[in-house]
Length: 161
Image (cartoon, rainbow, N blue to C red):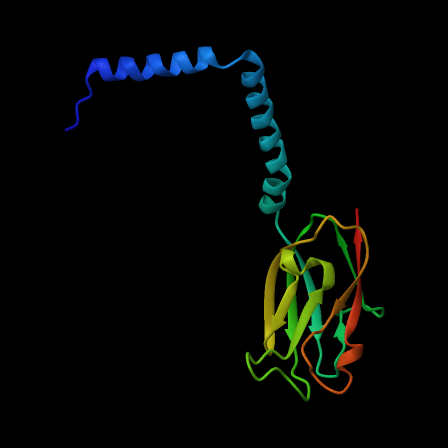
């Protein structure tokens, strides 16, 4: 059992009071504002992570094309800061990466550092992602040499505010 002497507890509380007294009122306000701003900055992240993800289905097909089931135009439209469950069915083409057995990839150029460079194995691949706050048109590309039409394996992705 650890016993603290009353003198030690009093000294610790006196030291805190002395430090608080020495801190100027401006510094105290600055610290409170900083704490408030940090808290406000976390609200969008907490809100995004607490929502249920929207399921987005894509096929990375063996004919070296991305396809969206039920759509004639292969354009993916997402909302900025939206949480999605990207469900990609990858079908092996005539070529694949023999190092890690990736048959395709799903990559958005400016977003690789945000988790949007995905190596796809044959079959169902699922990824939980947050859509970057980067409205406009973007290009999804396959960066794995997957067959003779690999250079044409891309798709438009539109982010709305």
